[in-house]
Amino acid sequence: MPTGYVARDDPEKKVLEILEREKSVGIVSSQGIHGPGGVGKTYLAQAVAWKMRGKMEVVFVEVGTNPNMLSIMNSSFYPYLENGTKGNFTELEDVWIWLSKITKKKKVLIVLDDVWSEKTTIQILWQMREALSDGSQLLYTTRTKDLLLKVKATPYELGVVPEAERWDFFVNCAALNLEDEQVKANTEQIGKAIIENTDGLPIILDNYAQHLKQGTEGVSFQDLLNQIKDEVTGSEQWLERSFHALKPSTNFIDCDVLSLPKSNDLNRVQQLFLCLGVFKDDERFRSSVLETIYKLSDEINASEEDIKKIVHEDLNILANHSLIKFIHEQNGDLTYTMHDIVREYALKKGEQTFRYKESGRCFGHRL
Image 1 (cartoon, rainbow, N blue to C red):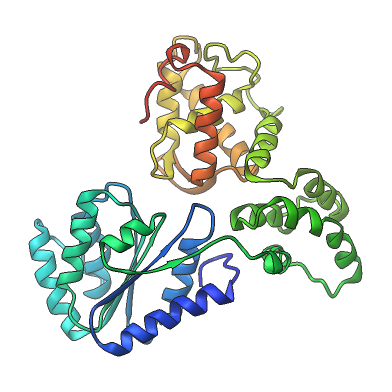
Image 2 (image 1 turned 90 degrees about the vertical axis):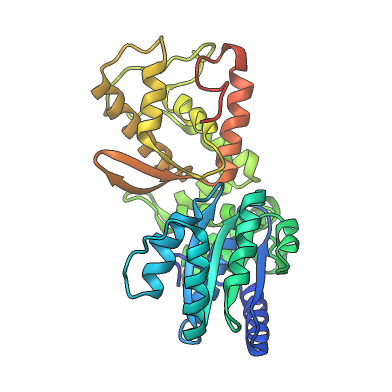
């Protein structure tokens, strides 16, 4: 199961029922989970894929915007279905011939996560479906029902957590032991605020739950509860509060290395956060890109090594505020991911703070 997954029984049951029903017919079938960002589409698809193991081969692939499907097939599909051997296809037509042959031997559930409705992507999805042999299945996650209708997939809409289930969802995310009377009494104090102000969006419920689950040493449980009680609000207000709480570490380089026009009232970490708005819809980004943005600014007077240290330190501060998440490091280049809610807030806040024509090289263009 996906790390940190908290089951939502009804959606999971319904998606599995559709898969099982269509699997029993024996033809190529497809269905899709659609809904806005933050409702848990990827988690649900991962959980369903995990439960389908043993019944058929399962391949899970993150697609994203403007995918290189040939590369995905060579690096993900082929190795999984051919005992780890990497594919060397140069044409998608050859991929479809191979996929047709391999799915005659074994039935496969292909999960395509985070699919967007670009015309070329839809065309490739149709080709993939046509190549599959009877008995195999496709499962998509996407934000738009329209895409699912275009590829003739059975749509399932995933929404926010129903009001009656929100408290239990929060408790499970935080792994709270409500058999402890003191814990139960304390947490129930903020239950009403959580239910009323988070709108049932799983990403926000989980964010507040992590405050409790990952409490820092020396901070009492009650202090954490009070912090959450003060902060609980909708996504816009949550991000606004988090933004205003950002500040540079007192144990690091004491200089505001980044000074974009009309930004003197913002500290260094806040300015770096606003730079996240320049990224495209692909939610992953690298620290080296932000370092380049800093280097291009005429108002920055610091060595490349200092810029690198400052960017890494300030990204760590953003991660500690649950605004971004560290993925991996390669040759000193850090890769992070952020939810689209965070990216869109950074873009909106940046547009409000810096007028495009006066914002240097950052906010006039999307990378």
